[in-house]
Length: 260
Image 1 (cartoon, rainbow, N blue to C red):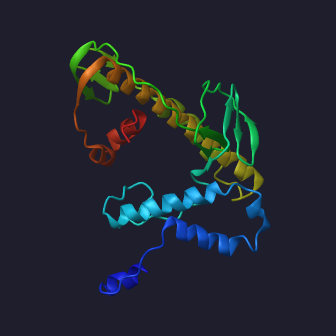
Image 2 (tube, rainbow, N blue to C red):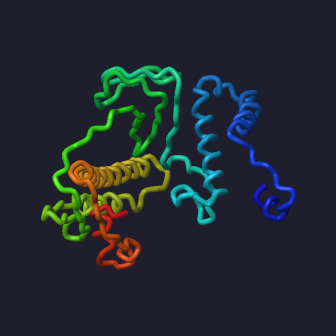
Image 3 (cartoon, rainbow, N blue to C red):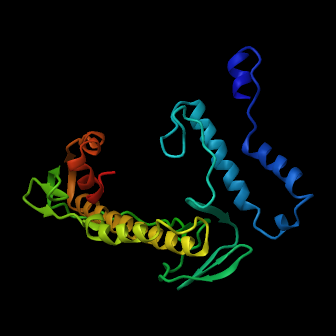
């Protein structure tokens, strides 16, 4: 269809909407697959909505780099990487469990907020662990600002140095765990691909990568939260991250402090 519209500007074909795609999916899948009746219908509906939004962003020239090619066209989602789906309907939250449509009550490791009824939830899988996320409404709170304007200097030796003299050290999660990561990858080098031992080793590596990323995200979250709560205006220098990654002496430092 893209080739037809580019070659025939006078007779362009209309791209199907999310509703059109869902009608087509139901007509093609439901008659031949009984399992379609056993799962929530909202999962494919949200997937088609996201696909429709991705194409609209592509046509309006605002497609982001994440999940899009150089031309801005949405790419196929690879199975096993960033797996997720969205559900809505009868969702209930109770202390440390949540009721999901078609799935029922699911226990969570963390305590959930009280007196909330989320309209939709997103279930995601990362390093063979499942996560549930949802939005809640909260009244904004105006906090007392310690300093009106603050300058932030991002660096390599320290994550950030403020104009007030405060210094925030980086988590250095990658630097502290890189030896363990190298060891796991070294032990996995001769395993037969897709064998049980290879899958177990890949899962350990994925979980370690996830741990490194979570430590880095937590450090950046604490820094940005402190800056937002205690300062009215924040001035941050513009770093040339691509140039730092091209320099082998600074590339690892950029990864360590989470500039990417």
